[in-house]
Every structure is written in C-alpha cells, then in structure tokens.
Length: 326
Ligand SMILES: NC(=O)c1ccc[n+]([C@@H]2O[C@H](COP(=O)([O-])OP(=O)(O)OC[C@H]3O[C@@H](n4cnc5c(N)ncnc54)[C@H](OP(=O)(O)O)[C@@H]3O)[C@@H](O)[C@H]2O)c1
Image 1: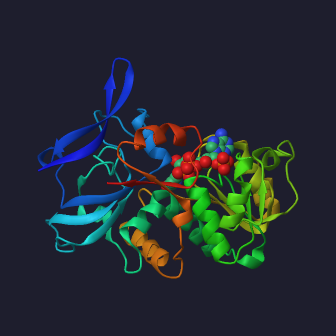
Image 2 (image 1 turned 45 degrees about the horizontal axis):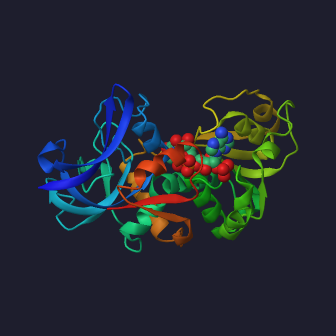
C-alpha cells in the first residue's frame, strides 16, 4: 500500500527535502509494520537531514528517530495488530527509514507498548528529547540527588530536552535555574516551573577559574562545551551533572579538581542504545508518577512543515517540542 513520507535526497548541490509517495514493500525487513500516528522533531533529525555522517550515511533517507503508532502487522509474539506502540532510538531514522512517514517497519526489540495513562500523542510530545530529560533526572536521583541537594541547573532550557527537564524537575519539587539564550522566553520558562532564568553568558562567568562557588545540587546539561564544565565547577559537594548533549560543543576544557576536591560526578546519558527493558521502565514512570501535562510545550508540525522546522532546530531556535502529526 502507498504512504506519504518525508524524504531527504543527496544531489550535486547538497541535500533536498520533499514529500514523496512510497510503497510498504520498499521498507526494510522487520517484525512490526506500524502505522505512524505521531513523530517528533529532535536535534538529531536535523543532523540526519543535513547529511551528518555520524547520523545518516545513505540517501535518499526518511529521518525521524521517534514514532508512535498502531501495529498493522506483527511477526513477533509480544505484539499483535492493533497494539499502540512507541519506538525511539536504536537505528530508527538514522540508517533505518524513520518516523517522518505514515509507515515504518522495525524489529520488535525497538518498540514498547504505549503504557496505560499515556496517549500516543503525549508520548511524542515527550519523544526522545523528553525521554532523555527523564533519563537524566532518573540517573541524577540514583546518584543521590533530592530536592534538598540544592537548586538544579538546566542548560539549553527552551529546547526539547531542557524544557521537559525544567517541567519534570519542578513537578518533582526541585528548585530549577534555567540557562537560556532566549531572554524573551524568561516568562515561558518560569511558567514551566523555573525559579530563576540566567543567560548563557552568566553560565560562562568565571570560566578561567579552577573552581566556582558551590551552587548546584544537580545539573542537566544539554549543550556541552565550556558551559558544561563551568557547571561541574559549581556543583555542591558530592553532587552530579548529567551530560546528554552537544549543541554548544562536543568538547570542554577540564581539570580533576572538582572531582578530587568536591567529590562530584559527571554522568553520561544515552537514550539510543539504552536496553529496551530500561526504556520501557522509564516510559512507565512517564505514564504514572512522572506523568506531566506537556500541552504547553507542543508546536504542531506536519510532514510539510517539518522541512522548515529542521532549519530552526539546527539554529537553536525551536522552543519546546515539535510534534509531527501524520
Ligand atoms: N544523549 C542522548 O541520548 C540524547 C538524546 C536527545 C538529545 N540529545 C542531545 O541533546 C541536545 C539537545 O537536544 P534537543 O532536542 O533539546 O535540541 P533543541 O531542541 O535544539 O534544544 C537545544 C537548546 O540548546 C540551546 N542552545 C542552542 N545552541 C546553543 C549554543 N551554541 N550554546 C548554548 N546553548 C545553545 C538552545 O536553548 P536556549 O536558547 O534556551 O539556550 C536550544 O533551544 C542535542 O545535542 C541532542 O543531540 C542527546
């Protein structure tokens, strides 16, 4: 059967974006044929659509690292036609035709059943970005963070990961300081639950010093670079930073001093290869004790409008979560 798909093609003048009609028979082999109802736009989709070889090597290609939809055909005992499922990460939208299309076909091991209490739509307002925010908070709490640890810093706060992190942390009773380059979004961030909003420049102050005043009880860092290590230098004794992103830079200058004098931890976060049982457990939390009303984060997108949204996310201009309605 034919279906609509967003496609990126590589030509002599670079990469072009279009909507095409595809056939299910063109999809890769896999256990589950899924009718995609919603996808969401993540920073990595922008990298895929512009030919970043660390994300996608073969073109033409349909990006979309997230998909939520209904199983049409199943070759696996754990799933049956009609099941509502969520798929994020693994190779979806990278080497495998992704969620910016009305159909995907994937291995059963990439999907989780949409937990009761969470709609497919809500799952894609969360998407990889929101899921990663939850993963950061979970790992910080496993490392000992509680609301009594002190204020939590969230960088890249108006972005996908950052905005969900602000909302989740505030809902869990944390005092949140948001770092944002968008001064005009201060009130929006405060409405999400941030107690304070500071500029990127303020987050970089004192970058030349080996240690800074002990301020943060935890950090969710989505940007990397010098902001990341400045935040490490400002952690309170024994506290942790969860590093998940690189929009500012993939590298940073570091010293061992915060680690050996302040006993702090730098925690790595990956949502892509996280084993599916751990993914399912986090989705379960997001449907129960971590359930959030995220409607104020959504920007509705379509297959047609995602083309220009890709440029905005690469320029750091997206606010909240772009949800693709198929
Ligand atoms: N590890 C994982 O599994 C995983 C999963 C999801 C995402 N990520 C990564 O996390 C990062 C954020 O993803 P996202 O989906 O939230 O992207 P996003 O929606 O584009 O948000 C990133 C935000 O970072 C801020 N920013 C942009 N350029 C910056 C710069 N040069 N310096 C400092 N801040 C800057 C902007 O917020 P303000 O204007 O408010 O400052 C921007 O909205 C990306 O690097 C992505 O690849 C990793």
